[in-house]
Length: 531
Image (cartoon, rainbow, N blue to C red; front, side, top):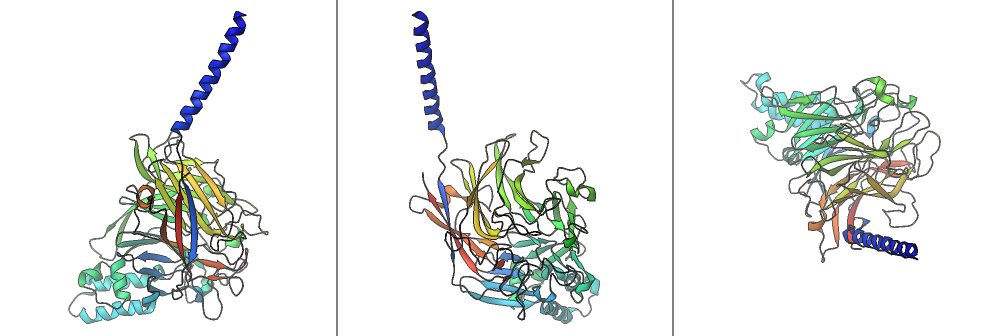
């Protein structure tokens, strides 16, 4: 009898402890609100049709500076996806599709408030130089230096898929892809090795035919070249005064032969830039040690073994809590990307988080999240939105449209174009860092159940709404606590512009009923629903 009483008491104690633990677990569990994405097309019709373009915004955020990229020629709508079955040194990227106009576009008034072709841009500098050059040695004349810089690096304003980042009044652009010689495409294509720093306000003034002061002329454009920093299909980030070239590849000119002549970067390259005192149009560049899983990412032999071997994927601003000092710091989140080595073509579906100021338990400046699985949805470069909730220390990210519908694809193709979205959550306190994806598998652009053509988002740009509040940790991440309130549950987070408009899931080329460059603008809103 005594034994039975002890057993009964033990059972009751176990139940009590379990109940107590559950109550404690429930009371301390984080309540994560639901965030709902909504997209609606604006009535704007006068923006230029562009994809894979270089972009910035004026300091008052009322005008967009747009140049380079690809557009639609009048005779054949060839600004869409390149011809996958064409000759990459001739017919895949037609000369007429490269945009050579610098635009200043006002989305509020839906008007192009200024435009300047590359040829006219050079002529404006020449004319200005010719009016003041008398008695001044050419080599020491700042306008002469600027003129030579623009002529020698004109592909900055006529390339495709460059890496772009704006900080304050300066636009940094790196690499990009295009012909060796725009007058003769049979000479082959190349990934450019230039890095440029552009004064956004000064270039906007010039395009709008306003006069520049002497100081404004000398601060218009600065360029350098570096053979380590060659990339297209990657992203550029700036943390403090350090730039981070994040992934991409040097295309080569024979991609249909599966990586022949093609080299992936296999790394994130930190580097700094400074002005050259002797030539006002030149930058000094210092490249730091790469962040990678291989000792020498420049080696061709490493091209098939690195988990950093990916390009054209969503690469987002991110945060993490540094356990060495308990501070929240900037990082880079790499979600998916293309292409995995081998055949058939496959996307990466896992994630990498780059944290430059924190060396983890594996003695690395990055965390590889092999458990993350995006399931072939939204694996290509597309617009994104990132929110940070300080109450829960959770990041909430959205990938919008692009390429990756989660289905199998025809032979030789990646998963098709899509209007779906992926919502990603991350607890920045959790180490090692991990993310969880949630697929919004419906037509987010039309708010319809059927994910049908036309498809949007690939190589499109998200222009953020700067009237809402951004995190004190990153001006690219929205502050949830300060942007939403009991009276304001829905906020406008920005506008999606341009990119590829595909009329088939796997168009395979450009042209009528296949694909083209888009000039459509979409308003993006997020609603916070408390649970």
